[in-house]
Amino acid sequence: MRRAAPVLVAATAVVGLASCGVVDDLAAGGGAPDALPVADAPLELDSLPYVVGNTLHADGREVDLGGRVTQFVVGPRGVYADTYEGTVFTDLETVTPLDVDVSLSPLVLGPEGETLALVDFSSRVASAAVYDLESGDLLNASTRGMGDPVTDDLGDLYEETWARPLGFTADAVVVEPATGPALYLPLDGGAATEVPAEDLTESWADSTIVDGLLPSAGQGYDSFDVDPATLPPVLVRRHGELSPDRTAALVDAENHSWRPIDVASGTALDVDLPDGADRFVVATWTDEHTVVGGAALGRGSSARLRGQQRLVSCVLEPGGRCTDLGRTVSGLASWPGRPSTWG
Image (cartoon, rainbow, N blue to C red; front, top):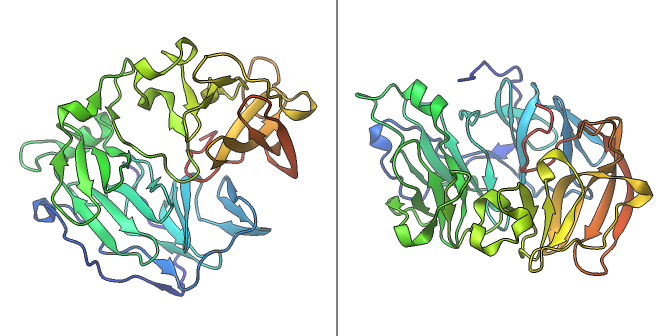
């Protein structure tokens, strides 16, 4: 498990308020922080930020986060990023190391972008936790399903399983623990409870599908996380990303091919990337059927976007079109809420 001393130790004008939520099961050995830092003022950005290597690019500013970034999310009062050197927070002026380890788990924003779920591996027993990103307060945390420190080799357990937040419902975070069934972790501080069998659907890809999950801010639905019975044949056993309203999808989004389809019929949508581009990396969804991302020409057999990406906004519906946003970024750019494209 990666944990190195942060290379940046910068003071920052942030506030971290004490938690007002009820914390579940922390006596079992978990140690999620009582608060995350937030900036004094709201973060106001005119353009979508992105990361290349160590560097966060935001509205013309470049912020060195101290290590190669593996994932990051943008909250209302700052950016939270995991790097090869540790997890950090930035208000775009300074960078602050955080006492959490999310190297084995995604950072997951709530539907409105104002809450953050994670699994923290910094203590002997991992903790699932959820935070309010306006105040920084810890809303709830639990070590349930994260193994027994007496009988389990927790290091091996965490390496061999994938404990992570699966997403949010209207009033809880759904957590895939290291052992046992999926859990609801209530946003009101209540105890974690098992997701009932009637809320679960089996997936051919051996992933947990939970009914009622809402897409994270700026995200669609991974086809592996959707009941196969609701998908057209072209998406069954194929990877892709569905729009937030599930009316459209990009098939094979994992290797950046451009194949927009109508979910109801399974037929191709007549939406073309500009200038003959045939590769596309999803950056964010701006509404229920509009996706923004980087477009480029494929080269040889590789799906890697070399050189530059041209940012475009595409309406994925019959008669929809892609609009060039007039912005070019590195082909290695990674976007909020999405793992680093090239590692």
